[in-house]
Amino acid sequence: MKSDTAIFQSFTWLWPSTPIHLAIIIVVALVARWLMRKGIDQLIKWMNNRSARRPAPEVNRTGRAWSDIIGRGAERQAKRTTTMGRLLSNIGVAIILIIAIFSGFSAVGIQLTPIIASAGVAGIAIAFGAQSLVKDLLTGMFLIFEDQYGVGDVVEIDKLKGTVEEVGLRTTRIRDFNGMSWYLRNGEILKVGNVTQGWAQSIVDIGVHQSEDPQIVMRVIRKVLAEVDSDPEFAESLLEEPKVLGVTDISNGVMTFQVAVKCVAQTQFDVIRTIRRKIKDAFDEARIRGGFDDTRAKDTTK
Image (cartoon, rainbow, N blue to C red; front, side):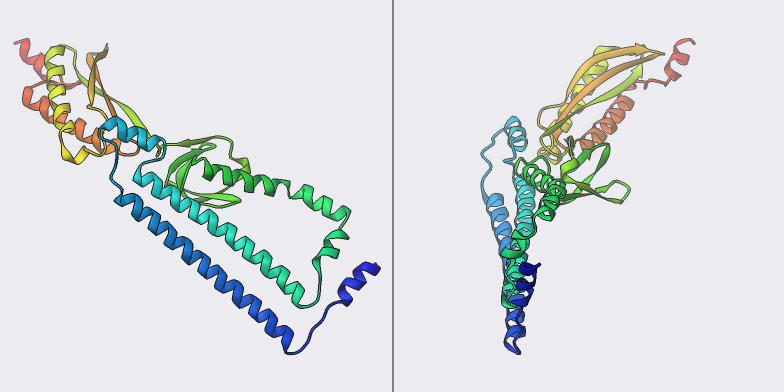
């Protein structure tokens, strides 16, 4: 009790020096916070511009895929730089706040060291209670440093799918596809699925009538795939030339062919839609019936 009384007895308030001192501390803290964030924003902008101007060393599609997987792609580096910048900004704000608080106590004559030393059992209890907070902070740092996901990535975490909007020291904010924001504690994130990084391989099923000649069908499909592969619109999406895998199933009057498409992650959807549309047009031109078209069968019975 005596020590506590002595601590608060050291409180001093001199007019107008003490208020001026406190005002200076607040102004300096706000200016430091603004300068820090401005500096980090400029650093992020400079790094992104430098990465964009740097010529890509990859000369083929496989090189582009590997570059994106290990995080060397320009877009991936930009996302990672932005995420790291936000993390540094949060850490800087926390440091500035702590320094300002200590300076404020010192300005009014209160020393925090005796208070911390006298906390005793209460300090230990607080330390145990803060374990989850420390876990969240450390996990958040590792998530960012290991580039498990970044701002703008499409992820799946504990059956929650959405776009990462913010990665903080304690929580991650995700916007699901219905528009709802979710806040996840970093320490509770155990498994992350990232569909934005690297490449994606999709299998497209193409159904035709089972009486069609497989060789003719495959010839038409290959022609369409070659056209799509040479289309400049998909030069940055396709990592390999699409391949027809052949007949994979014959049932209920339908013969199914499969086409394999390997693209940069999240770019495969336009490619798949284009392939299906072009194959449909090519089938119509070659008079190849779809899986449930029986008009040709009626004609052959005449």
